[in-house]
Image (cartoon, rainbow, N blue to C red):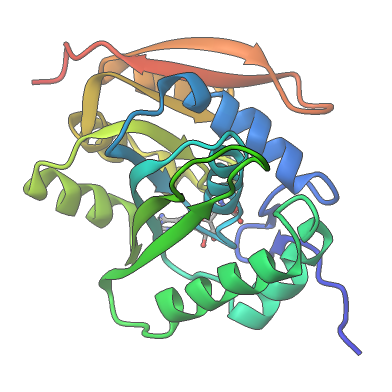
Amino acid sequence: MIQEQVPFNPTYDDWYFSPGSGYDESLYVFYEGNEISSRFSPAFRVGEIGFGTGLNLWVLLHELSSLGISGSLDFRTVDEAPPKPRVVEQILHPYIDQLGGPQEHSRYLDYYQSLTSEENEGWHSVDLEIPIPIEPNQPQTPSKMIVSLALWRGEASDMVTALQKEGWLADGWFLDGHDPKKNPKAWSDELLKTLARCTKVGGTLATYSAAGRVKTGLREVGFEVRRRKGFGTKRHMVQGWYRGTGID
Ligand SMILES: C[S@@+](CC[C@H](N)C(=O)[O-])C[C@H]1O[C@@H](n2cnc3c(N)ncnc32)[C@H](O)[C@@H]1O
């Protein structure tokens, strides 16, 4: 019998996402917080701090696919200790229907498995092709979303340094590295400074944290920051736009 896992990370004494409402929370905070539906363009680039179970990526792909949006997505993420695939399977089990059904669920788990099977530090990548469903009675050529997915195994500050060396620039960031009070390393000034240098002018970010030091840190490295109502019982979250000045 599979024991139901709760999405809790004992290392940081914090949740991966809100238990019971992970899909809706990810949709609200990261997808809508970055205004992805209206901003998505071919060759869109998303960066993430904190891959965890990968739920944010799966939500992003499922939402784009539901809107019939095709193109290509370059998704770069980082995790120092991604959970084991069998744990991810159990944690994501309650979201099977929202993620598109058992077939989609097992497809995602296969990708997760191949992405995390090797444990050496640095980039691990996998290419995905997501077929876009065609509306019945609509004579269209089948289209797809081509996803280049790369996970940096290791420290978030090393991942953004690697992106900067490559000259990689994000259209949007998902800042999901646990509560800054419990995990300040994932929100350090140095990390935010490099992250800003890996963001297109006008690029966005979103995070559930509205902590004062997060907002101040982001402003100091060149982001315009504003608070928005938080998900569920959380009072606030933060959205940001990179104005491209103040750091060089
Ligand atoms: C809140 S969870 C991410 C939840 C995830 N987005 C999901 O959908 O399941 C934060 C993740 O960040 C990782 N993490 C925390 N601090 C880190 C750091 N300094 N560098 C790299 N990964 C880090 C943790 O291992 C954890 O998996």
